[in-house]
Image 1 (cartoon, rainbow, N blue to C red):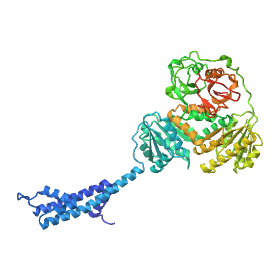
Image 2: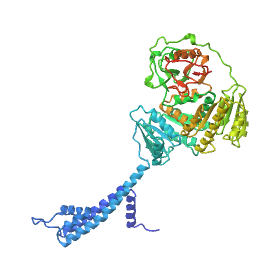
Image 3: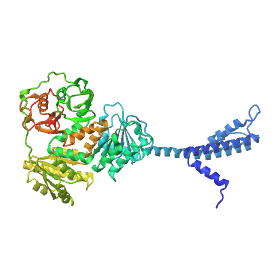
Image 4: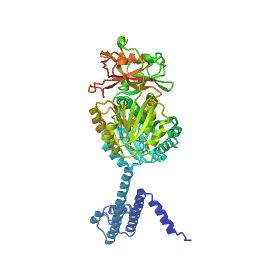
Length: 634
């Protein structure tokens, strides 16, 4: 065994000191400089080599040390020295040593600054913010998410969004600058780290965050990573005592229970595939419904708010419907439970909150019109239209197709049909298995290229009421999948124009930028998956009670939005106020939310003829094909 010498111990201690970084290196240079100056000064003073002053005395140790220090720091000062040859030699030695040490010091400082810049570039410094929104994870969806958050915070003096992702900080910032160009008053901060690591989560200061959004990654097992992030947040040693407000994406329904168990009451979960499937089914059956959802879920138009109104305490829900002129009451938050379109006789308690649709929260004001101007003679007697079987064509394939068919079966009448055409080898087997569980519709499958004109010509020889164009997102890249969708849409609209057929089209777009290209096809509705999910995530992050509102709104078992014939509610061709329409719906136990005018798509304030939350004192005249938008359980 080799014996450890004192030189080994000294070298080991020196190595340990050097490993501490730039500060330790500078410290050693200071020590060496002090030793050099001290030794040379002692030699000069001890050997009486110091220059003689005008009064005949010699410089002392401190004065000599100062002269040595100046020569060590500035080699040019040596040229002005005078004295004995021995003194000049000692100053030369001091200067040469200084040149050596200062050169090393400059190199050390340069390396230290570069290291600090590199550390800052990596985005590992702690975020000192309060009331900010934290986004954990990175996916293409983040750009739509940021745009929504920026728009939601537009009325704030200053807001902050902090992103933590396992991605280079500079790369994240470059992508954000390219795709989210105007951040307004919102400050966006990027940090590099794993959303599943407790130590990395501390970097974004979640303890002071207003809300936290967890995005499911594109690769690997996304739900497992979301659940790990939930665990790291809720069980971290530095977590705050107050509950977090967390919104998280979940991809598969089987993981919902575990995620809820981990997050408890601190998390609101959004089942992405289920959400898209339900919206796709609802909008494919009702042309214009996606426009309404874009309005309610986005931040540029009317939104859903919660409002306490003490003046309405003791009144019935029926009375609140006509209590506002520029606001639509759609439900109640009662005893902590969200109830959309509750029974009209439900009494409003002091602590209850109204769920309303309004332009902004400060625009919610009670009407001064008493009584409201209602034309009772224009209201039609209530009657029920019998449900008719429907034929639906689904073009394309992805993992949501089976859930879409299951959801569709909960809406359509007995005897309905759905036909699927897609280029997948396993489609027929999966459809055959699913068919056994369907009760309302018959399902068939055909393997075919949905972008071929001959295929579409043959299919549309048989009329369909609804067509759903699904993205091949499981098989192709987002851009290639969207390209196939666009080709199919162009063929369908051309066929509709040539054959004079009438059918609604709902399509999926993986990239929101392709929506502008798709709009030239004049399709009735578009489902942009990332955009809709981003709307929902941001809305819930702004108000956690909205999670229950969306669950009720998109669930077939709850109250939903319908576009019903205007002639079922009021007389056609007669100018009347929306107060009259609201009263007609109220008498049927429904809430009138707006209307769609079939031949008024170019009118101001209308998108595809849709108007949500119109002023109730505004006059409107309905025609045969117009629709009333109502919230109803029927």
